[in-house]
Amino acid sequence: MQIETVTCPAPSPGGPFEVTLLKPPSPRGALVFAAGRGGNPARHMELLRHLADQGIHVAAPHLGPVASPVPSGAELLERTHRLASVAARYCPPELGVAGMGHSLGTVCLLVLAGATAQTMAGEPVAFRAERQFDRLVLLAPPTDFFRGPGALDGVAAPLQAWVGEADTIAPPAQADLLVAAVGQRTCVDVRIVENAGHFTFMDEPPPNIPEPHPARAAFQRTLREETTNFLLQEE
Image 1 (cartoon, one colour):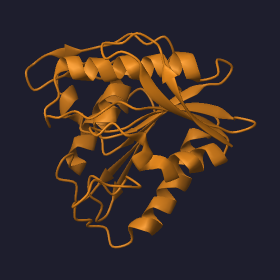
Image 2: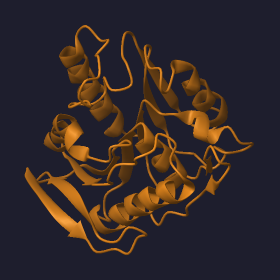
Image 3: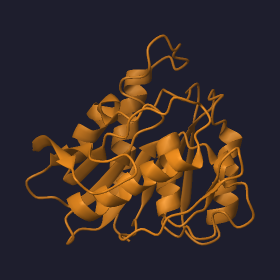
Image 4: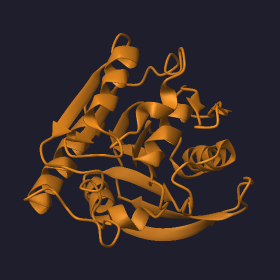
């Protein structure tokens, strides 16, 4: 497996940005990874390495931190634009492409998959992607961004959502919206993880955050295996 970080020159509201690529010798699929509010994919590197070891070509843009816990429409749109540029530029065209992300990253992935998000200020965020996702893996998705009428009507890709029972940022009940709005069209596999918090899904969580899960390392091994199985599952 080859790992390299390149600079994406694609125009975006924030200018050029870095992308970490994990390239297996004989890829079986491709994936765009969207980090959460901190924007740093390195905090998920063990997961990304595992995916690449199993034959998944991974493109993970460095999105930069969002200072406010309440992102603006412009901030969401910039991140979404970067993810779309990465999918088009760095995922081999002969492979199907999936999306995987954590927290705020899942909001941008759902927008790319056809959803319309809405910020706390009521700003709509939509984007027409050049490449469509075959599958989505959502880690701790905050679905409050999609409470508007028909906000998720455009999402048709099968998805797997992992939510923490002890998550106070994106509580388990938020996953109900995915089942109700998307489950009528495609497979929606929701995994509620006992004792998991919002950051249990990260290999390197933010500093000074208490971890509620008593066996986080063992859970993350399961997470890596199960997400890989879903991503490589044949139709």
